[in-house]
Amino acid sequence: MPVGLPLEVLLVIPLAAAAGLDLYLTLLVLGAAHSMPWWDDTLPGALGDLDSLGVLTMAGGFYLLEFAAERTATGALIWNTFHAVIRPLAGALLALLLLDGLPGLWVGAGALISASIASLVHAVRSGDIVLDWLTPAAGPHRILLSLLEDVVTLGLLTLVLDLPVWALGCSAVLILVGAVRGPSRVRAFAFAVRLATSRIFRSLEARRWTETEDFPAWVRRALHGDVMAPGGGLRGSPAAASHLPDTPAFTTGWVVVRGDTPIFVYRSFGRANVIPLGSLSATGVFEADFFRRVDFEAETGRPPSLFFDLGGPSPGSLSAEFDMPPSQGIENL
Image 1 (cartoon, rainbow, N blue to C red):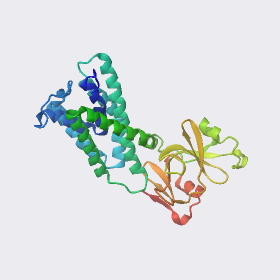
Image 2 (tube, rainbow, N blue to C red):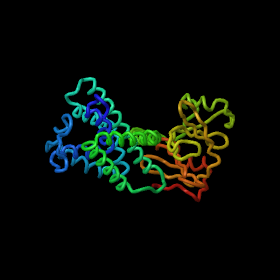
Image 3 (cartoon, helix red, strand yellow):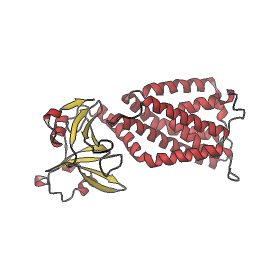
Image 4 (cartoon, one colour):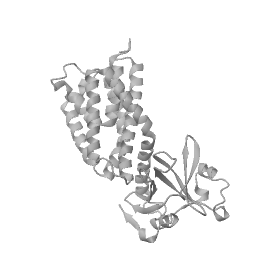
C-alpha cells in the first residue's frame, strides 16, 4: 500500500467498476457481507450501513428485474438507458459511504472518480448488449454473458474485502481493457438510444433521404468538390456501420448516395473519412422494431452492416441503392 494513502482510497476504483458492471449484485454482497462467516472484518467507511433489510430487499428485487429486462432487446435498451444516469449516481454514493470520515477533498475527488468509472463500465457493457442485438453474427448467449459479469463482480468484491491492492490492480486491468474496446461500444449504446428516441418521436415522419443542404457541415466539407452526382446534388442519411473495412468495429456517420455508388462518411479524431461502398456486395435489407439493417458479404470475419433509423430511407430505396436483386427481398427480424 502506498505510504500515507488511506485504505479506503484504494477501494474507490474497484468498487466503482463493480457497481458499473452489476450495481445490484454489488449492493447485495456489501449488504450481506457482515453476516457471512468468511468475512470477519468491518466494512470500510460507512459501507456497513448497507446491511439494512430494506437495502437488501431493494437490491435483490432490482437484480432480478435487471436479469429479466435484459432478456429482450427493447427491455435491455430501456433499462440501460435509465441506468446511464443511475450508475454514476450510485457510484458516487458508494464512494461517499466508503470515504466517510475522510477529509472533504478526498471525498469529493473519490465521488467524482467513482461516478466516472461506473459510467464508463456501464456504457461499455451496455454497448456489448447493443452490438449483440444489432449485428447478425452469432455470439455467446446473453444469459452466459450475464453470469460472466456476475462472476467478475463477485471476484472484484471479494478482493475489495480481502486483498485491496489486488482489487485495485485487477480493476485497473478491467478498466484498461474497457478503454481500449470501449469507444465502439459506447458509440453503439448512444446510437441505440438515438434509435429508440427516433422511433418514439418520429414514428409518423416520412421515410426519405436527406438533401445536401441538410447535411452536417463536416459532411459537406468532406464531400466538397464531389462531381459524381449530376448537378452536384447528393442525398444522404444518418447511419451507423459495423465491421466496414478500414473503420472501427462500430461507428456512426452518414451514408451518401452519389451518381455511381454510395459512400460512408464518418469522423475519427476530428477528421472526416470517406469509405466507398461500391466494392461491397449487399445480401439483404432487414427491418426490426427500431432500425433497418443492410448486410454485406464478407470474405473473412464478421460481415459488414449498415444501420438506419426508421425515419430514414425506406427498405425499397435501400435495396435499389445497393443494387440488390428483387429475389433477395426484404425481411423482418
